[in-house]
Amino acid sequence: MAEIDKIAASRDQDAFRTLFLTFGPKVKAMMLRHGADAETAEDIAQETMIAVWRKAHLFVESKGSISTWIYTIARNLRIDRIRRQPVWQVYDEDFSHVASEEELAEERIARAQEQAVIAAALDRLPSEQREVITLAFIDGLSHSQIAEKLSLPLGTVKSRVRLAYQKLRDEVEGAV
Amino acid sequence: MTIRHHPHEETLLAYAAGTMMPALSALVACHLALCPRCRAEVRRMEMIGGALLDRAREAALSGKAVGGVLSRLPQASPEAGARPRPSRQGVLPGPMTRHLGMDIEDIPWKELAPGVEQFKIKMPRRGGDLRLLRVQAGRKLLRHGHYGSELTLVLKGAYRDETGEYHAGEVADLDEDIEHRPRVTDDGECICIIAGERHPRYKSLSLRLLRPFYGY
Image (cartoon, rainbow over all chains, first blue to last red; front, side, top):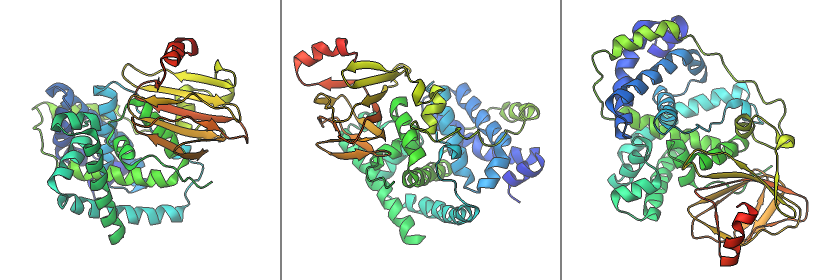
C-alpha cells in the first residue's frame, strides 16, 4: 500500500513522515530557486505536505500521480505565499459537463500512462528546451524573465517552450 | 458548442507553471471552465511539473523540520470535498463568479461610450489589467494595440476583427505586435473578459488624450 493510501485510510503518521522526507526537500529546493529565503522555503514545504495530509482522501479518489498533485499544491502556494497574488483555479464544480464513472475510470488509466511517457520523454529533450521548461515549472520564471535571464528574444523562449511541449505531447499520443 | 479558438500552447504552459500575471491567469481559468480540450492540455502540462519535481535537486531540511511538521498534524483535520456547484450556469464562468461574489445581473457597469460598458476588476499591483466589457450589437471599438499580450474570452455573443471571428467560449490570444479593431456582430450584444499585461494602447495621440475621459 502506498503511503498516500495509508494516510487516506488511517491517518498514518509514519507514512506521512516518509512522504515528507521524500518531497519536503524537493519542494524546499523549488522555493529556493524561486528566490525564497531558507526559512520561507522550508515553511512552504511544510505547508505543502500539511495540505497533502488534509486532502489525502480526496486525492486517492482521483488517482492521479502523486508527484503532479504535490507539484500543483506547491505551485499554488508559491503564487500565494511568495508572489502574494491570488490563485485563479478551476474546480470540477465549474464544468458544465460532469464526467461519468466510466469516463473517469478511462481517464485514470490514460493519465497514469501519460505521466510515465512524459517523464521518459523529458529526459530526451534537447538541453535548450529542457532548460526553458525547467526554468518555467521549477524556478517559476515567466517567459519574459527567462528571456532576460538567458539573453534571448522573448519569441525564442516561447517557441522553445512550445516545441518542447509538442514533442512531449507527440510521444504521449504515439504511446497511449 | 464547438470551441475553435483556444489560447496558444505557450499561454497554457505559463498557466500550468503558475508564472502568469493574475489578470491573464484569471482569464485562462475562466476559459478552462468552458473548454474540456484545454483542461486536458493543462492537466497534461502539469504532469511536466510533477516529473520535474521528481527529478529536482533537493535542499536539505533543517533539523527541526520533521518534528515541526509532525506536531502540526493533529490540528490539521481532513478537508471537506467539493465546493458547492454554482446555483446555475450563467454567463460568468465559475472562477469569475467565485472571485467577484456576484452574477452578471449584479455587475455595476460603467459606460465608456454609447453602447460600450465596462467593469474593471481590481488586481494587485503589477497583476495586469482585467475587465469585463459589454458592447451592443454592431458596435465597433477603437483601433488599438497592446503593451504585452492581450487575451479576450467571449462569454456571450460574438465579435470579429482582422484575426478572426470569436464566439462564446473562444479566446483571442494576441501578441504585442498585433493591432486590431474589433466589431461586435449584428446578432446581439457581446460580453467578454479582457486581460492584458497593461491597459490597451491607442495609435493616435488624440485618442491617447481621450483616454482619461473614457477611463481606459
